Structures are given as structure tokens and as C-alpha cells.
Length: 219
Image (tube, rainbow, N blue to C red; front, top):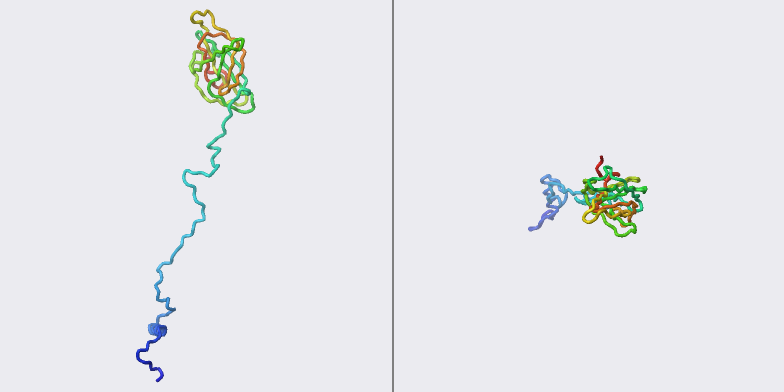
């Protein structure tokens, strides 16, 4: 008879599911409908397109080179300097005489000088030099300090030179010298100054200072 199924017969799974959906009124969309879904959507984080920030303490190549390494001022050289000598503003002092050695920048560029010029007194044959000792304290130039001085074109610096004129021991007069060989600081070439002088001792040169008075005592 049609419609009568033999014992043990089972309805196909899809037909059974359809009958259950019709009986309960639940909409069915397929076998995947029964699988659980996440309650929250999964989000993704986009990779930033901004360049990576520099690490602390680092800098880009070439950045700030001028500020950190300013141009170095050129040193004054012998051919660009004119040497002259004038008496100290205050004259001599208690058996001491002296000179103010003046250097003038004759170039068109600024340059720098620092420290002591080298000074050697020479006899008329140019031999038997006597070197001046370096000192920051004296009688005519009481106290001077070493410093770095920038000379603009035409600018001047000066250094005090002093000595004693009182004979000591068996001498009745001081030796005479024809002039001075003067070497600017950090140079090997000298300038010759024809300046006859006599001294017995304490032949001293003081550091360079700005101007033309070598820091001497003015009267």
C-alpha cells in the first residue's frame, strides 16, 4: 500500500529537519545555521604609515653641524703681522725699563693670537741671544693674564717686555744689544726689531693683551 513504510524505516535527515522547522516555525538557512557565531566582531589594527620616530639621543646625519662645530678662527701668522715698539705709558719703575711690543693685523681677514711672543735679544753680530722669560707679574706691567684675542683687519695686540738696568756683582754696566728677534705665538718665523738696549737681568715678556698699552701702569 502506498504511504506505508516498512518497519525500521528512517526518514532522511534533511526531510526530518524540514518537518521540525515547519512544526516549530523557526526559519532554517541550512546546516550552518546551527553553528555558534562570535558575539563580537573581530577587529584589526592597521599598520601605521607614519615613519618611526628617532631614538632619544640620536640625530640625523649633518643636523646641527654648524651649531656644534663652529668655524675655527685662523691663527695669525708672521707674514700678516706688523711689529712695532713704544715706551710704556708709565715709563720705568725702580731700576726697571721696558717696551710695549705691538702687533698689527695687516691682512683683510680676522685672525687670533694667544699667549706669549718669543723674544730674544741679540748683539750687533746677531749672535749670543738672551731669551726673555715668560711671566704674568712684573714691575712695569704688574699683572696680566693669558687670553685668546681676535684681531680684526687693522686690529692690534700688545705684550709688555721689561728688564732691570742695575749692574750686579763685578759689573759696572749692563751688556748692550742691537735689537730683538720677536716670534708671534705658535710661529717659527721671527720679526726683527732694530732697537738698541742694555739690561742686566730679569728680562721678562708678558702675555698678549688687546690694545697698544700691554696692560702697563699709566701715570
